[in-house]
Length: 242
Image (tube, rainbow, N blue to C red; front, side):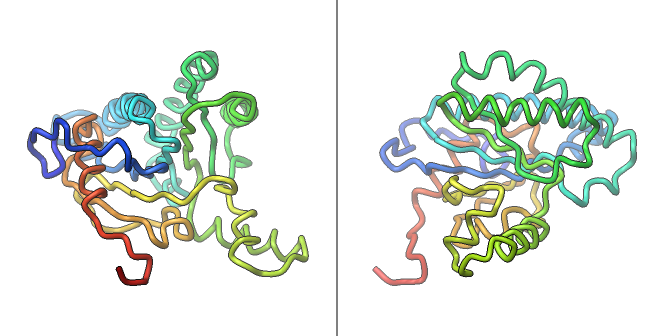
């Protein structure tokens, strides 16, 4: 689907010389996608996982260096246990498939968030992916798992205080999950909602946002390119003037 919920021809419109290095996406709309089709919400999450695979591969094809997606927030534990279990199972299945192929496909998988509360097997897989990613090169896909922007800021503040370093933006940034990763130039939210939902609050200070009604399972390569074109049409001034 296109950026505004319908197909649009964007061939040749993406300026490959001005791609954002880092794209972040709030993967929203899985449950509504399933409900519209009379399916359980878990079916929407399964389809959404396939969409993530396709979009990650297309980011690599385009030459985007970093892709960060909101996989599971600190608030998502409030959802029904069956749905939470299904999401965690899909994550485990993805990692079982992804880890053996990361080096070959040149796709690094990193996790942002508090992994301590995960089941041991899933936590082990996430830590294995993190460690392996440090040894290979390629596009980096960051999965925000048990992640909240406020929680990340509080965590970083505590670590900054414990380290006894001067409180500067640069020093503070070193204690974020995203340390050494550039801030996202473009944030995309499919699903029709127009809020940031506690996502990358520090990192998105000057990001360009694109909101689209397209539900995440229907978000495709063309929709990604349309969002990039919208970003490239923006006049980014960072508080100054041109």
